[in-house]
Image (cartoon, rainbow, N blue to C red; front, side, top):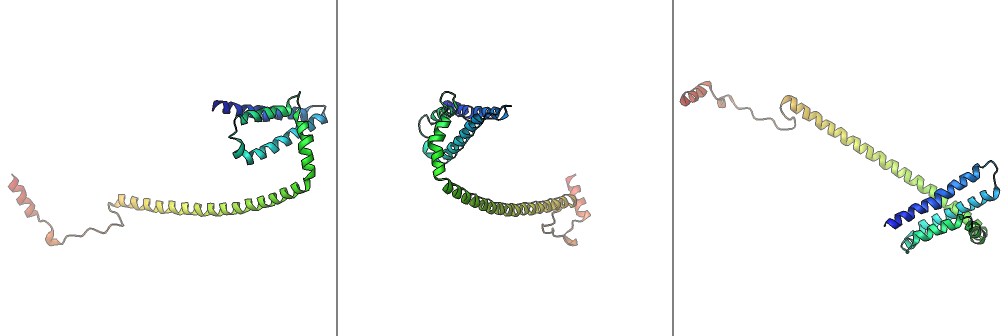
Length: 189
């Protein structure tokens, strides 16, 4: 567990942070070296491709022993000054493949872009419609709760609950008389 955590941070550091800083330094130099800029652009193209493939194939790859360590070693191989693996992988594998299939890749990406846009619009519409419905349901619920609290305030101030049936009023024959009350007091004393 701890080794996996350390490996992840090292991949972040040596696979993304350090190369990003080196790319920044190359771009910001007063004297721009085209070869160095080309190298870092090739590096980021390879990293983007690896990241996309990794997201798709993560189910099949992540369980392999030392997967994180191999990935870290690959990232360092790509930019390490003595190996400069970026140029080798780009020139021997990536460039020939992409140039051979460039039109198919572009067509597929355009189709996916259009489908993705339609998908985003569809879900945006459904989410806003659902959100609006839920908002008005919540508003209606709170309004009904405030109506109940108004009724409870009326109950507290008047001493009765308006929704409860009224108590029966006794007839005058059922009222106790004062004479009866006085006779009870005499018997006690």
